[in-house]
Length: 186
Image (tube, rainbow, N blue to C red; front, side, top):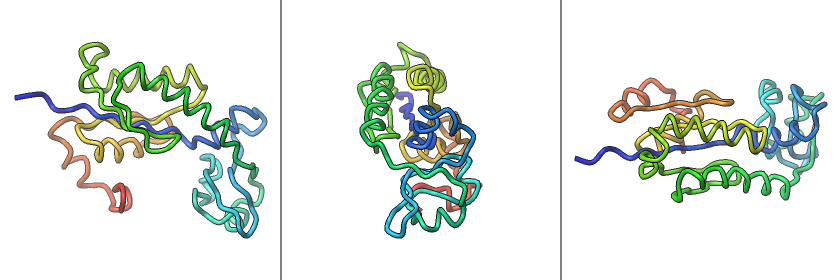
């Protein structure tokens, strides 16, 4: 019997806002909202400081301004985000050629064939987290599991800078106590 697959889901933490805080040190620790506050504008992402006020992505900018009037609203710099995403992807590519990006800030990595070179899933995930941090000064949360679905749910549980491992055979026990809102796609 073959051993189960090892799938990672890597998800950058508040990616656009984290880049803005990295590039503007005075904004660190403050509520940064990427997107406009006008009536036809939408929030792309919000720092964890802004999320504490209920601000989230896809929210109308006007509502974000109501919830967080002291928030720092910044226009997206997509070319910068794409360049940082390419740096992150270079890190992923060091560990496997089986990378499936979902967006600029998240991807699935099948590291099953990489275990002989780099160690088990949690070891690879920890190395990826360290190398992304070294390359970009940003944090990434990683879920490790035997399937994409479970890895994706796991990566979201301990943000920011999380690492959640769901061992083979424990998927049901991992998913069962979670609220429905934690399930991907629900």
